[in-house]
Length: 259
Image 1: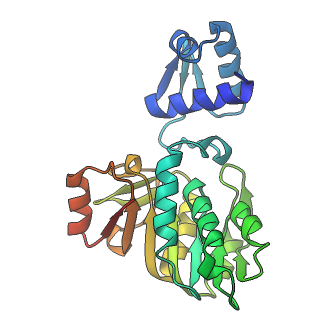
Image 2 (image 1 turned 135 degrees about the vertical axis):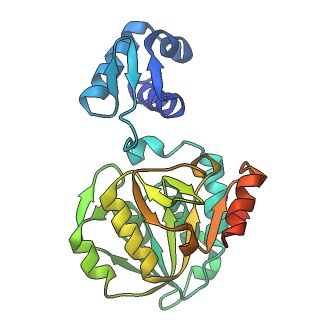
């Protein structure tokens, strides 16, 4: 197993369990304890975890894996969710896309839709995500509007007051948000307050708000609030969402789509 593959596996285990034990991680990855200790030390130097005696723990409520390490987590669910979200978009719409692994997949699904292969424009896409803008910019039928701001390396998103200046001047038909947590009572949230602020602006400037979130994010809370549940029109999630959870969102006025 390569170092990058080990690091990804370790970070995935850490997110799932909240803490890691060196010996248990060595057994799970079939490598030596010395290798795991070295990996944890190097990841700690990059501030991706907190080293403890005999293992490691996550940073806490604001902990977030960089996008490059989140790409393959729950990949099948994200692909189904992204296909369902892309199907909601009507040709000619102005669509806002936040950064994240799921929204990146949604952008790819939109680019692959035959009915969006032509038009002037087929879609107007507003995004603060550099990777999404990069992928869609080669599609001449898409009009790409990129917000200003300072690049956030964890998610490739532009954040800060420069982005506010652009978003305050436009309106959108649909805003598609990837979130870190969505709770009926506490609403949608992100780990980072600057990211949440941009997402909040996207919601405010759109006629329809769609949240794309797999079932592991439902009923959870994160540090920075994006919007109230009442502001969400549609939640697209996976089939593993408990019926009780789905019913609570439906009662709150949110349309649920299981992908």
